[in-house]
Structures are given as C-alpha cells and as structure tokens.
Image (cartoon, rainbow, N blue to C red; front, side, top):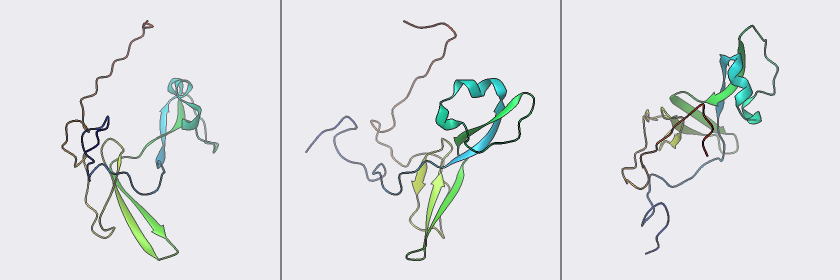
Length: 122
C-alpha cells in the first residue's frame, strides 16, 4: 500500500474528475476592495461604474451547474456546495443539493485555521 500526504489510501469521494474549470459569477463589491484582489478576479468586460462600488469575480453560490455535451447530446449535473466546491452528480436529472463534502476521512477534511492582521507579521 502506498502512502501520500493525503492519507493511506484513495477516497472515492475525493477523486478528481470532470472538466478543469472554475465557474464564477460577477458580484458587486465596495470600491476599496477591488484594489486588493488578484488581476484574474477583475472582469475583462466593462461594467457600469458607480460611486463606491465595483464588480469582481466570485465563487458561485450554492446551487447547480449543468453542462451540455453537443457531441452525444448528454447533460452532466454538478452541485455547488456552500464553499463553492463542485460535486459531480450521478444524474443531471436527479441532481441533489450538496452542502459539504461526502468524505469523512479526517486527513481529507482537516480543520484549517486562518488569521488576518493589519500588522505585518515576520
């Protein structure tokens, strides 16, 4: 058996498959926020500007994404979880809402701590 940083064996819920895309949506944000985001998050399409707001790209809200393949006339369904992650559904017609990962392996779902500070850390 091989080990990896993710754990001792592969998890069927965590296997990566499907298109390598990151669907995003446009969102209105305070104008000061747009200066602190990476260039890819700023839309290429010009949007109407207003006092005190701007547009940025953000992760999709919880819901569904459907992909249609013209070559075989098939639909593929993906559930968008609360955190913006995509989960392929067994059937586009019977897609179910996904709130979080189905994986229960602790080494795939570790607790992540995040901090922010206005003071530069060493």
